[in-house]
Structures are given as structure tokens and as C-alpha cells.
Length: 127
Length: 178
Image (cartoon, rainbow over all chains, first blue to last red):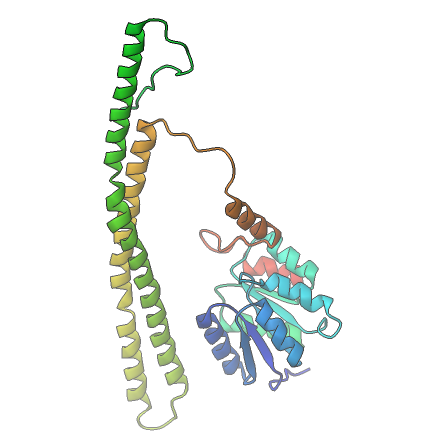
């Protein structure tokens, strides 16, 4: 199945530079419809208002972390199937396992490159 | 300055006037040395000059790195948006020189961080000397805000970046998702 380049993607990170980097990488991959949020609370508000094909989220944010966002998304009947990739500097195995148990679809450790992001998006969104 | 021995336990009754006088002299001596130790901390200088300087320098470092990052990313985005054509190479070179210019921030921020490190080292030295001089012990009890912060970090697994790079390499993470 080919990647749907028209699907809307939500990027969640409290560092505007990282949002900009991910947005540019996504643009390079052909994705143009990219929204952003600066933490889990803002992301949830956006998710309630629009159907996204993918969420790419940082972990360490205030007030709501990416881990909490993931758990909210998976607990919500309307959002639970939304593909979710964690992109984070949290690299301890306990973090990865906790995220996997919470239902994350894939996990990328910062710093990362475009090829890694592309591979993970393809794996999650079914290229 | 060596450590100060505090006069014997004040709760112990003093039996004779001469012993009481000696006790008071010891206390006076202790207080004098304590004042010397506090004076050597130069706390006013720290709070008036050094620590504000640390805040200012770190603020400048954050601003400079943000500014440089914006300039570099702006140049990169500009290159990606350039149209093909005869002027392409010259336009790319102009953007690349803008990147070189932006990278000059590292020299300045390096000097700022060196000043901060020097101030922190000085503060550490003075506190260490003071602590030894007065045989300071940390007060009992807990800092509530610190306890709350630790609880939150533990429950949400906020470990932060690891020293020396990721604790778990991407390959090992990928294996968990295969």
C-alpha cells in the first residue's frame, strides 16, 4: 500500500526548532498537510477537532507529556486507532517498553535523520 | 582556614566562674571565626555580581543559539526553495555563506559558557571552604517542590537525554517493534 501523502499529520513538540525540522523532513518526503502543537494538551485539542493520519510526538513536554498524550489517545474511542510515533531523547529501555505497552506504533530516538523518519512512517502507515 | 571547634555543649552546667568565663571566651572566639568564614564567602559579591552575570550569560547563549539555528534553517529552507536555472549555484553559495556566518555564534557562546563555568567553580570553592570551616550539615526534612518534581519525573519516566548518547540504540529499539 502506497503512502497517502495527502494525509494530515500532527507534529507535537515544545521546541519550535524541532517542529520546523520535522516539518521540513515531512515536506521532503512529500507530506504538505502538517499541523503542530506544543504539548499534549494542545495536541489533544487539535485531535478532537480533526482526523489525523499520523501523530509524531515528543515525550518530554509541559504540562502534558507525549507519554500522557499517547495514553489519552489510546483510551479515546474515537482516536485509539490513530497511528502514533514517538520522537524523543528519552532513550532508556524502560521508556521504549512503557511506550510500546501504551500502544505506540514506533519509536525514534533523537537525533535522527530523514531516512529513519521515512522508514518509520512507512512501517506505521503501510507503504 | 581550618574548621572551628564549637565550645562544649551549652546545656552542660558550668561549675565555676572561671570556667564560665572560659566558656564565654570560647563562644566569642567561635563567633569571630564564624564571621570570618561568612565574610570569606563574599555572599554580597555573589548575589550582586556573579550570579546575575551567570543568568545573563546563559540567557545570551540561549538567544544566540536560537538566532543561529533560525538563520541556518532559514538558509537551508531557502536553498530547498530555489528554482532551477542559471543563477542556481550563485544563489546556493550565498545561502551557504550565510550559514558560515551564523556558525560564528559558537565562538561567542563558548566564551560566555567559559565565564559561567568559572563563576560556578568559584562559588563551589567558596561553599566547600565554608562548609568545612563551620562543619556544616544539611538540614533535615525535604524540599516539597523537589519531592513533587521527582515524583512526576518517576511516574512519567522523564529521564532526559543520557550522557554519551542514547541509552538504547535505534537498532535495539527497532528490534522491539519488529
